[in-house]
Every structure is written in structure tokens, then in C-alpha cells.
Image (cartoon, rainbow, N blue to C red; front, side, top):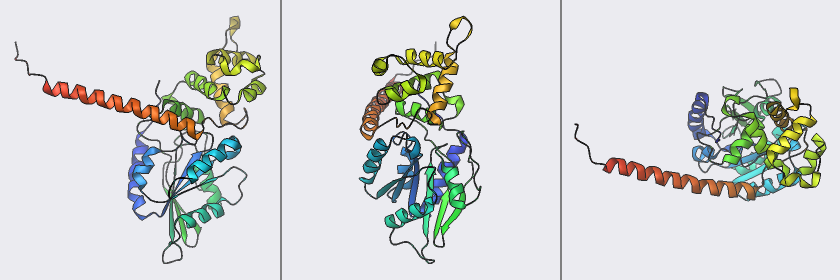
Length: 315
């Protein structure tokens, strides 16, 4: 099942970014450090053009530090781009954000040429919490639910630095199937767009290869050495049994087990986990583009055949 979620308010956000970007010096994109590739909005590249970009890997305290370092190096190697990590313990994130943005736009600053920033990100990536920290007050509504923020706001980070916020936004078509499941697992997708069991199975599949020890420790799983090679549905059932998600007759409540797995990932109860590396996501994206290109070719061929079909005379 391919996961897609692009409600009407996200189209409004897209239009708002298109208008706002005309007067913006640096674009800040907030990413989920546990899924930095999947949480990067490809539509932003089209909307923001060649403007300098600051990639912020948020929630890095919930992610694998070694993989976070890989992703920071990968983003920092891109032109006109800087990348930093943030976590819940950051007391003065504005200082680091402004300093990085000033480096990206050295010709902006002072009252006559204030530095104008735009912050974007997918739903539930922690942007509202960050905005409240930056503002020093509860300026934005927060919650563990996709699509909480619906309005744009402006915060003065310094006397000559303005930050414009936008509601969380995905993109119209998620072509990397694995990325769609990772987004759903993180809470970036509305609940009506996915099935918990499917997402939990994909989440287990992504976690078991690199973090079998964390799975075993969290759920007291048997046969630790074979976790990476065991079937995902078998592991989900065992997790359900270990956590008491059992119905009458000894049957495992897979829906409850799936909810447990997803919630444990979101809260980092499993431990610090990053679901993808730069090379893994690049491979998924390349494969997805091949599939999309083939689908486009097939659609074009079908349209060509329909246009060329002779009109039949009515009987």
C-alpha cells in the first residue's frame, strides 16, 4: 500500500510559500533526524529555487548519533547548504540558527537589509515546539498529531532577523514507498491515510537489521541472533505476546501490538534509532524514479493509443 496524504490546507501552504519566498533570504527546512531523507520535502526545492538552505535535523536526541553525523556530512556537502542538529535539550537554538543563516547570506543584516528567514517542515516534525522556544512563549499550538499548525506567523529572532513560519506540509505524491511508511511511523501522516499493522511491519523491517539488540531489549525477544532474518509478522506477533496484547483463546491482538510498536518508536522507548542512511535513501529514491518513469511512459503510450483509435460509427 502506497501512503499518500495531502489535505486541502497543505495546498494553501504551498501557495503561501510560493508568495512568501519572493522576499526570503534563507530557507530553513526542519527534518526528522530519525528519517532525514524521508522527511525532506522534494517540492521545496521547486518552490525555493536556488536560495540558500539550512537543513536542521530536529529530534537528534531520539536518533542514532552515528547516522546523524552521516546525514549532517551529506547535507553539508551540498551547494549553498548548511546542516545542524537540534534536540530537546537545546536552550538557545536561535543563536545557532541565526549564526548559520548569516553565514549563508553574508550580505544581509542591519536595519536597512534585515535577514529574512522562512522555516518549513513536514507535519509533526517539532516545528511548533521550536517556534515556541524561539518566541519565548506559547505562540504555536503543539501536539503529537499531523496538521496541528494551520496559520503563518512571524518571530523576530534579532533586531535585524525575521523568521516566518509555515504550517507543516507534505507533497502531493510520495514516490518512495519505504519513505511513506517511515513518515507514517513518525506521525507525519494523518491517521486515516494508513493501516497501523502495515506501518508497524515496515517499521520492524527497517529496525531489525541495524538495531536487533534494541528490539530484543525492549520486548525481551527470544533468539536475538536471528532477529534480523525473522519474518516481520512473526516478530510483531511475538512483541504482542510479550507485551500482553493477547485475546481470548491465546490469539495475539495484532492491532494492539502494532500500536505499541509505533508508539514506542515515536517516544524513543526502543532507544536511539535512525531508519535510513544517506546511501539507503538514495538507492530507494533512484529505484522509485525508475518505476515512476516507466509508469509515465506507459501512461503516455495509452494516451497515444486512445488518441489514435478510429471513431466507430454508431449502430
